[in-house]
Length: 184
Image (cartoon, rainbow, N blue to C red; front, side, top):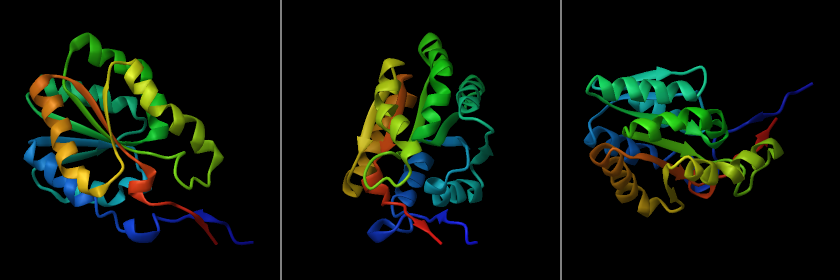
């Protein structure tokens, strides 16, 4: 019996052309720590951050740990960014209150699921609630649907987070990322 497994994105966005753009924006924003829960959508960006000698890439067991790491980085004089999938936002809701209470910078790059051509029905509920959940916790949300908007919007989000001590989430739409599908 063959087991079906998800593939990387297919179509013109295969290979994550957006990853180098975000990586350069993170470097230019002087991000030194990047946290993540393994996610196929972020694979290329995670690899780039892991290979960069000026960045520490740290794997998390759950997304809310990334908020604590961001707090520690800020208190220690460094900048941090968290990479996560939209399903991980639900794991962070309680910890997001720390950001509002302490008014500290926070930047997260979120790969969206539960949208454009989604094949997995389990991804749809949190995918549909991600933006509202973040906004309810006073996180500024920027959504990116087009590759040509990526550079300026990620750089703007980083400036808002690190220069304005704001919590900012950048949502990378599933249309931008490319559809995933099951293969045998």
